[in-house]
Amino acid sequence: MSAIIPEDGEVAFEPVKVLFALHQGLDALDFIGPLEVLSTARHDPKDSGSRAFECTFASDDQSITANQGVDFRSNITFKEAHKRLAEFDVLIIPGGNTEFVLKNKLEPLSLVKAYAEIQMKNPSRERTLMSICTGSLFLAQAGVLAGLCATTHPDSIVKLENLCQSTAQRDLSERTDVMEERYVVNNLRFDLGEEDDNPYIRRRPDTGRRPSNARKGSFSFKQSNSRRESNARRANLKLGGLRVITSGGVTTGFDAALYLVSALVSYESANEVARVMQYEWHKGVVVKGIDV
Image (tube, rainbow, N blue to C red; front, side):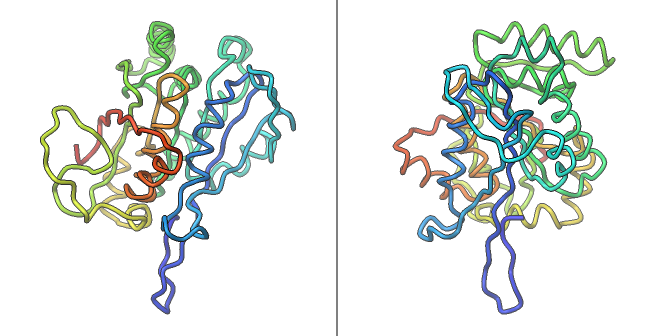
């Protein structure tokens, strides 16, 4: 939940709960990039106290060593993460050391699968699963990319295609449309407001139409979790409406995270984060959405 309205009419903001799944040998920027974006985001860019995201770090070990040699400390174990998984609005999966994880069937594979299952059992809540770089290979192995569109690092596109094909044969599931983009978003659900272009994405072809102000702001996240018609339509989407975002190489994690800010907080907040970070936001594509 990102915004609530108490009885006195004053708007109070609650941070969106994010879980980062950290594994040994991950790529540092896959983790640090999105973390920097989400940590900078505010519901009200003018109010430093209106923090938009609350991040938790899970791993098998208290200390995780990235591929670059830097160590990160986790807050909770994967065992505890599984117990608390339903309370998180977003699960983020960094890439790196993918061959070892896939070969040994290690976390975050079961965590990814469990998160998707939670959404399918309870589609009334809005949840997002996001991978960075080769983290999409973990999503593919877990079977959550079936019938969706996805991307990964350009050097791993063929590997992702092969893995998705193998998983489809294993699970007798639908194929995955693998594309080379900055990021790819599935199960968009911004059906609030006027029928107009979605302000959070660059769609192709670009119609040049003015974005609708009715769809901006933190209340979109709150309303999408409570409107009956939204919930019913979400249940008919893939994975119970779980929003699945995959991104390309490591720097695209900034772009995907900025999209996440725009979708769960506001477009203005995402632009302010990009300004503060002196980063040019490169937009990706959104597919299979009910208002696309």
